[in-house]
Image (cartoon, rainbow, N blue to C red):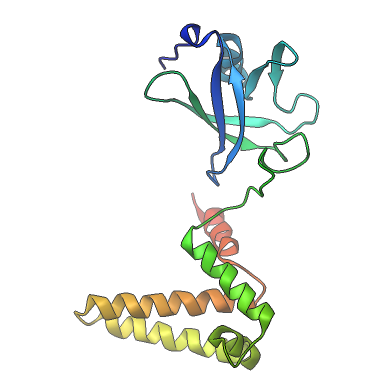
Length: 198
């Protein structure tokens, strides 16, 4: 790793990212000694500008950042450190120093889950298809998932990719509704899949 700490006045920024969620947890500064200690101990260690000493994240709270990997940027003057946090990262008790939860995020799918939740909570079944499904209950929702699954199978055997993708989108959408009807979200299924990984 080619890190030019000397030309950066002895300190370089280190961006800390959760190795699983990919969320940015915090920003700290490292000197050569703190970088070496991080590598040796596998616990992320910074040079504290306020304390003017090495500071291992979690040394007082127990909320360590266990090292997974260190990457250098293209200019050799910033580090990206992936870590597994043990507890909240921020001294305020928040997951991140930006006061955000360190939760898995699946981009548009997470937004869609939030929309489904909002429509369910608003419960306007005359204006919302989602709310009307929740009003009809778990049996109707499960039936819709079954119907959409059959349609995906039928389209998979055909040559029309557009129809196959459209039915796949319908299946995923209704499955997300079913998950929420059962009190779950996609992340709960992902955790089960992670548990099966060998």
